[in-house]
Image 1 (cartoon, rainbow, N blue to C red):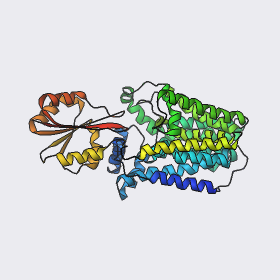
Image 2: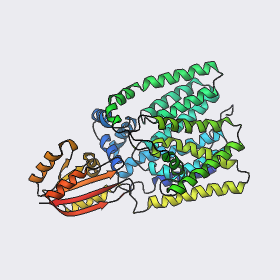
Image 3: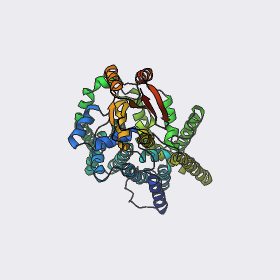
Image 4: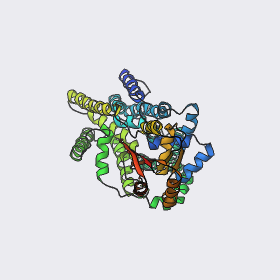
Length: 470
């Protein structure tokens, strides 16, 4: 780490990269339907403030900071384009932060290449165009790292205060960020272990951060019974697939063999960067910031869903930084250029799939439109699971009666609906976060005639529409 901070200057190449990144994040921003998770975010943000916070504390898996920002954001509108714009802005700023980190830790060339990978990354764009917290937490963790780099270099107390504030915000955005913050403090201790005054600052900021996070810890423990029933086993293959997804997104090189080969390829590239610049401690700083959160994640008792790469999305820019640094150390310039072109072209090919008209995470817009064209005034709409209604209600203009079917009152609820209504729409949503109850469909099939059965397939989940009649 250099002794003097690099001035914040903007290379013409970086400006071009940033403009291209802005274009990719705003292109077709509102063209796709919201999927269930996005609709839940919008639903919460449109509640009265204290009701929103209460509901998040009672039932949401994530802390409230992102939803709090979205609450104020949606006061000016709630179209698909507008509610996603907030995440797009976070992702755009992240390109700039990654450039600054690369420039300060390695070189301007490394910063430019890392920002280019971030700019064209189909993985980053996927979440930049989603009304969820993932673009925000990526920005916060990268901002935290940039501030840490400055604090380690200058020992400026103001930098440590800012570092603490950003980390507290990150913790109240996403619990998994705690794993990254732990890694940062381990790195800080490693770098400054011989400086007693600095060690006191590090321990003080760590204590303040922990104390500030106590309210959220109490919330987690108050829901430990719910969390215990949702724990999922961790699979090592999730880590292997994570690196290809970080670099190329979800649409290419995802089968078992190609994912393993891609993992090996980029591991070798990063290892070459370490070998050629093995005396540079900054490389090991970044490697530790990847390894420590992964180890903690594997051992963590707070895994409430099957692990996915997005749970550690804040590590992806660090991977880009390590790859960029390695590319700058290739002995031949032509090989470096080919490596950058290869990564960029594969991401653009992945984006072509993502931007295509047929791609949808979940197509609630078309599902609502279909029901509006085929429904009658006395119909009723039933959701399974009940929270699927958040997505459908965002688009529904029919004004029909709606009912979320809860598992604990299944026979009584269905019997009452069947007796009262001649036509019943059943909407079932299936994804990794939404599991419909097959018993509901069996009861309807047994007691009613199926007039319409239609499925909308999506990348994140499927929507099944059934119209039943007596």
